[in-house]
Length: 565
Image (tube, one colour):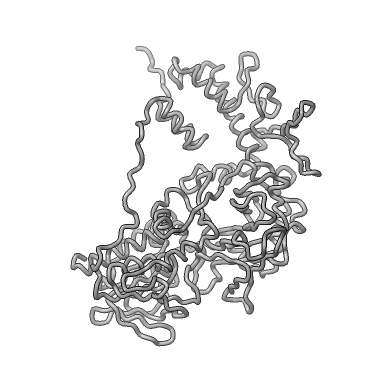
């Protein structure tokens, strides 16, 4: 009996293409195979659908926290006829959605004095320019966060592209390449070429037609030739990298380290100087293959995302300005400097007591504060078991540093227009502005670290954080310290901000699945207090998680008020 020859299925091929080349490669292959239906798109519901008008008439609701979850909860409940009060522990709304502009101040809980964001006038850009801002909290919106995007449309919040992934972004590791940064495109293209050559050589061993249907071998090799930019060398397809002579080098041309001029082909006497090829060993030793090189393949991270024009807090402003049926806006519902001390169920109602002793008796309460802080609030509104569950949620540390450039040197010298440069230094990332290209100045997120790096970084003094950001930036951009307004830099550690526990719940559904299941299924005592906040969702740390949880909480209140709880 003849042995059945294994065949690479289209499904397996598409999965491999998606892994190496991203969703775009898989989409192209599907289209080429005629397997994509014409005009088929994801169905979209009404993600901002309100509750029925008047369905909460006569009900009193207290929302604890004026972050995005609290504002959305209040808007939805008020538009359904409820009498809503938002108790905010600080003097500002927005929670972790904090955008700093010229003159804005903030204070971490263990500081004696505040930090103040200061910008300088540069060229035609005044210090108070709308372009001068630092998103100290959330900074980008993926395209699949439809509820957030739809609310931006409803609230007239203009959006612009946020460039997450630019091939000119730099990758730097002290333990590799002598500490010198390398453009992202070089790592990706040379890895693609090396892998394609390895796969093409399988055919020379007579093995490729055991993986792919024999009738498709030539097409498959042609695909590899294009995918990896391979060149025929005798009977073999090989990757010649930057030395290729019959095509443009995908990794581009050398940038002179002294003049910062890119040695591109120009006039007919100037052929250009391609970058040297990075070997497979070089790419592996860079240590960027395990995360940073392929971040844009993850569901969160498209090459281009979105952000509100003129700052992330424009979304907060949109909610605050939203009109409510009783007249006025959501902003009129907020009571500032009103931290909550206890929440109790008393005779079928909710008694909320503030730190000053003020008591409010309402029908429902929606706390939106971090779970570990909520667990410390007194009262019988949760059982001892749920209190323990909330206290065990892991909260990720997160820090940022903001610096203004004396010029847009990243554009002028490195031709970086948006995106993120990565380093194995403690600062982790530098974000470049995705707007106002060729302007006289710009604001960088000069450090953004999370988890273990942030746990160390947040315990630095303000001066130490700034020094670390300057030293880390120097590794990516020589002369960095003199190219920024170093004395004006600010840093923020979210675990040390008043009434905050950190950056976000650390992917609780995946890192603490048993805990998440218990938290999600816990019975609300008396069906009077309902949780909201990005932590109470599958999207912790994302604004869409806050909105999803707000809709979930208000849907439950609506059901309870209608007697369907």
